[in-house]
Image 1: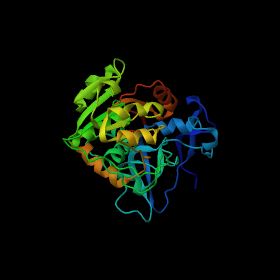
Image 2 (image 1 turned 180 degrees about the vertical axis):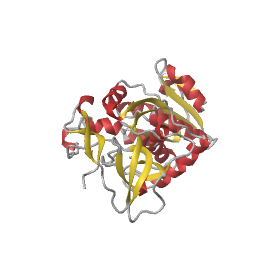
Image 3 (image 1 turned 60 degrees about the horizontal axis):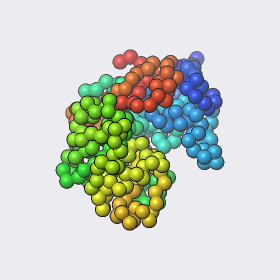
Image 4 (image 1 turned 90 degrees about the horizontal axis):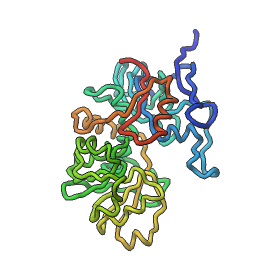
Length: 338
């Protein structure tokens, strides 16, 4: 019997967007605890371009080794075509979405078919299409695990302390830095769902978009430094993070918390003196949490904004779009027609 084949994007070497190749490869076979998904759309996320360029953002001695060739991608939305022998809760024909095998880099969602762990999947919200569903998993679960519920006991690679979300309500003021991006625009909506007062930080072009999503206040970082404009915050979620993230510490009230999505260097003596907490985590696949997020997406309480879409064969162009920055919402690859 001839081997079934499919189209997929593969890396044979690390580098810029030009190393993404559109190739013919065998269709994977699902294991006992997996389902075979016909991919309709695949989300594009920062880890995709990190692995593409060989994790050049890390010191050489700490970079993981990847087995090449490999297919990048972690997020998908599609339809179940086959079900493993040990799988319960999914059937052929179900529309599903998920973040696969993260924080490993074995999701392989830039493809027409994927063998997906059933535990990483949830039923796709019926009221949204595959493109919007594919934009939700990594960004949505990052926002969820930082703000709502961690949902796992795995230690953070960035710190010894366990990350603890802050209980959000009408008595809390939250600043979201990088609020127009994938994680930021979903975090803003989750904080509003919980009743918090939300201050969104982004460039001025995004003000109408973020106001529509529910931001109570907006700061254009091109016109003023947010750390000089606000104070007495309960929580800062910094989706930009990195070395400059510590500038937000003095915006917090005593007892406040700072959550950098991309961890930077913080002085423990300074945080102790200010009476604030700095913690972070690394998003992990979680089908049960994704099912909770799906209910909010289905109800329209939270929505995914789409920056742009590209055909699977044009994954290079999608990565080139990402490299230009100033992304509003999510970039998504379209794979199959519904």
